[in-house]
Length: 231
Image (cartoon, rainbow, N blue to C red):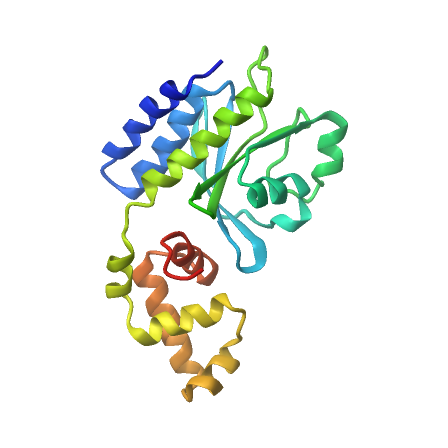
C-alpha cells in the first residue's frame, strides 16, 4: 500500500525543478518510482475538441518525446471517464478491448491500461497513462486512490503561474480572441464580430500562443483554462 505521506513527500522533488522541461520529466520519474508501473506516457489535454496531445514518455530504458500523438479522447471511454470524473481508472483483459480501440496511439501488449488525470481544482489539463505493470502489481481501489491523489498534487505544483501574470502577458484583444476560440467561434466569426480582418485575428492568436508558451490553439486555450483565466 502506498501512503499519502509517501506521495506528498515525493511531490516535493517537483518543486525544485529548474525548468518546465525538467519538471515534466521529474513528474514521470517520481511516478515510476512510487507506483508499480514499468512505463509512463504524459499527455496534455484541452477541452477544445477533447484533444489529447503527447508530450513525453519514460520507461526503464529511457525517455522520448511523443509529440506525434494526437487523439480525440471521446473515442476511448475509459480516458473520457477518468477526465470527466477526475479519478484514476484502470481496465484489463476483455474490458480493455471494450474500452479502448486499435486506433489508440499508445498500444498495450498486455491489454491493460491505467489513466491518471492531472487536475487543478475542477480543470483537467493532462493525464499520465501506463500500459505495463510489475508482475505482482494489484491495481485495486486503494492504489487507484493513490494514483488520483498523485494527479491532483501534480496539478497543484505545476499550476505555479498566477492569474495576474497571464492577464498582464496578453493584450485585451488577444484575451478576447482566445475566449472566443474557447467558445467555439471560427476565425471568420471572430473577424466579423470584432470588425477586423481574418489575418489580424490569426496574428492575435499566433501572438497569444507564443506568449503562453503553447504549441497550438488547443494547448493555449488549455493553459488559460488551467490558470483560471477562462472557464
